[in-house]
Image (tube, rainbow, N blue to C red):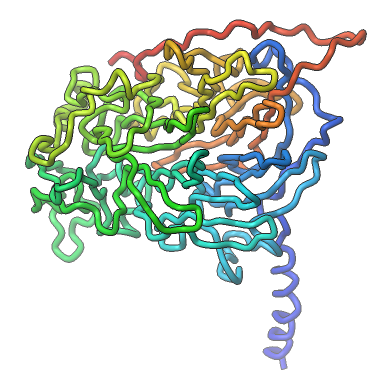
Length: 555
């Protein structure tokens, strides 16, 4: 009798618990959209931005937003990345401030109950989104961590465009953009590792345990079928030591799984799918092409008014079994069929064996000097440093987190900068990216402008305090930048959106995202003066030149 009562209680309580856990907007809650007539300018004492525009908050309480896109009618499409423990989400904000979901539709289940979610599921992290003709194209992962490009209609229906991309490592899927002259989709697939060698940093990130046979997969010029290595091996403590006779030291060679060091020749990636590359394909699927390779992480992709392609690329970090010091981030033009040098060249196309990229003497007690690991001539690879002047459009500070990129249109309040590139710098990933070593100060956390004529880099939108909002003593109502991830323009009026990810911290190699700290900002034409008193503003008519410097404290 007692057992029967317990069973009945379970039947009553379990549905109630599930109902309490299931929420329409996900366990992190939905965003708050600020109606257009209630948006106010952000005080220039907190954030500096160009003259002639106001900076406003369009939406807040987002969880890990990574990108946005603007449809022809001005509808703003926003993607929450799914980084950390949260589910990805895609939704639309109409010009009147109303909102609707694109993914998911219907009920959502929090992390512990994901197995209850029926039908199609999108897995994060999302790399980027692009919009055209009523479709939203999304770069993301599937349940097995392969990369996927999916097209959504506004009513939530989906179609797979490309699948089985090698995105199971560190960086997964990068940005996605639509080439204006051809309509083809361009997107990035990041490197599996920091600098070509699977190491303990990748164990910390967690993917080696899940995908022990995964490593970077090379691409080669036409007529070449093998990547020839120079024979380097990198030794680390073996996390599997003692299990089934595992040795204490694991030796790993580049472009091979952890604790594999036997091949000096690595076959070209199968099925036209290397890591560390930029691809293009037909918007309906098919026609997959490798546009560029040896690109560590194409976080941002954009096209100028002439249809020429550009990308942001993140430099190697001071971590893993092949740590690299002060590899800068960069903005690069994309030329089809070009090898951009990773992992033997810096993001700005200089030989990685140069003195400025060497770890400190203290680290060299444990690690080797950084040398080239590929036989370039034997592999048919053309040295990218020969084309550095034409390919490198901007050099950005190491670890600054160069992410989304967009070109200023010739309409709207920012048209004085027409043709210039605007780049979001999401900030550093210390202490993970620096092997625990301290930075001189926060790096990135701002928006910069790249002059298309002289390639000069200047601050465009930045906190006057020089640090992200979470490190300032501000009240809830004082708003400033945290981690800018993306910039996009509304081509109908030239206004500019900024996607701010919110608070992200690195702990023991893993990302921890603070829910509901993300925002969408917008630069709009400056409102006419009123007779009402206003807060004293700091002028933003002159940008500050962005100084390149070493990212680490002197050692």
